[in-house]
Image (cartoon, chains in turn orange, red):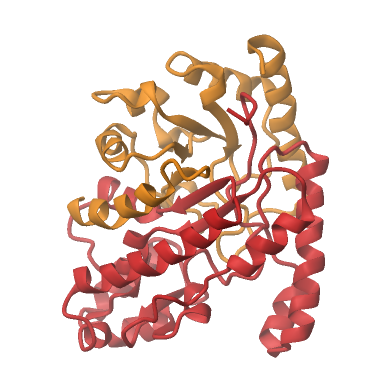
Length: 161
Length: 213
């Protein structure tokens, strides 16, 4: 992990206090809709690493059980005091449209650790990481994004903008 | 903070149209650019219509989230998994990794074949264009230097022009630092560094050195 740290840290040093927000996106594979072959594991092992690179935002997948619980991200570190969490609430690989209420419940798990202004919503990953392997149609994508918007609006009504 | 609570954004990549992919395969640059601009406008509209707060351009011009650097950076060559496999000492374990992960030969890897030119511009021009297509905040994505360094290193080839991975890594950091400074300069709101490989380090079984990603 030292090698990773030495390469990634300098970039966030440039971004820090530049006016731009620096984010790191980590996921466990986005090349197939066969969930069994993608990697799994909770975030506790990465928490210390995220802390060491002094990043403003983490955009992480949380929409499938492979990601583990949100709690694991905040174990043994101080990330909850500073980090913006881009919470993965939409699975880019499935055709099922996420229920806004499920998205809201997931955000509320994050709110146990973070204030509303430091919780953002996003899909777990891109919808077509590889040009030759689109994971979804624009029709499904539009509906998935719309669910995210409905959830965000309800959350803002409940917890403020 | 200028962002609302529960701000929404996409992670970056969106499906490429068949028209865009065939223009690319035909090598018709002006046709490709024309379709690229129109398709990008559609992606931005889809995001705006659905209330997305921080807009991405869909990365439509990229072959994939990291291989596109081969198109942009002198010294980097795109190789198919098949080509990489042929150059790798332990071909059988690599092939096994590819098939067990349900990947195939359509996924390409950028390999450093010469010392890379660190002042090459990545897709900065497209991010600049994105700024003209929306009034909302925008996000730019870049592949992580760790991911890139590991992917670009092929001992049999890269080992001849760089001393070791750390030596290559320094140039990759320089390349990305230059691009980040350009993005900051035009006021990109969010700069996202993509690193799926980090999770491989943490989550996968030990002893999988030459895995396909």
